[in-house]
Length: 337
Image 1 (cartoon, rainbow, N blue to C red):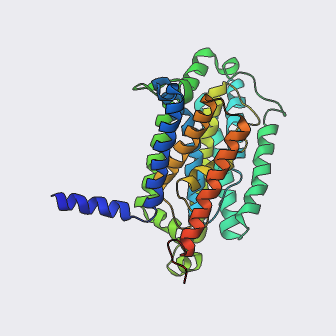
Image 2 (image 1 turned 90 degrees about the vertical axis):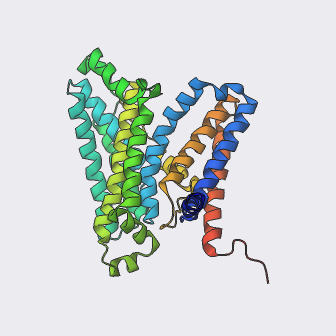
Image 3 (image 1 turned 30 degrees about the horizontal axis):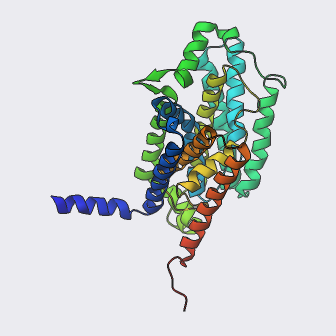
């Protein structure tokens, strides 16, 4: 029995990309304890709950971006889609439209953008950086135009205080089993997308495209369809984060989601998702999002300036990518002749 357990643990740890996941979680523990020793309030239950809630946005964006990084692509429009989702849903609710209808409208618009991104990259072979840079400007422009180039009023002015409070509690302020609903929403979506990536044919195709797109084609993988699916995952995550930000503020902000595309990349690469494609586990993205938020939370609590925060996180991101490049090159651990 012990041998079976040891064998299962060995298989788990030997999975491709698991080393980066373990390293990220170990780093998370070290960072959290270090900040806690500096300021005991880091260990408080309230701070932990707030940390989980704040981390959820980075986790969702990280999941969407990780799907694309594994295919060897990227989505620069994901942050602007967050803003578009927040503005569309908030604008409709201020007009008295039901929150459910407003959410579905925001989701439909984000999914359309995901399909366009997938077609441009998968079918027309546009470089993902250029294609999604264009849709980034388009979706941010839509976020500005939907309410005539201004932030919305409070959503409660249209749908009423009771409905407005219900929407805000569901996505941000409410708790279930003592934990903010925001985290439960992010966790459920994470588990769904984790299953799709690790246990389905679509997931295998996503890894195949990132490893070698030509070999994937010869193996019968529909590269266009798979690329579109990856961009749809990004669109869904962006839409949900937009709704979370709308609930947090109680209104629509045209600049919502600004720079979130970079936050998603950071969460992925810190957790071992390779920006070169074909490698990485979503468990690593979970760890990466937690590391990001723990750093941000801890540096805030010890009074570090914003510039210092960005500097530290930037160094960690560069180091993570550099380590991935070194490992892939095969030079890691080799002795010089």
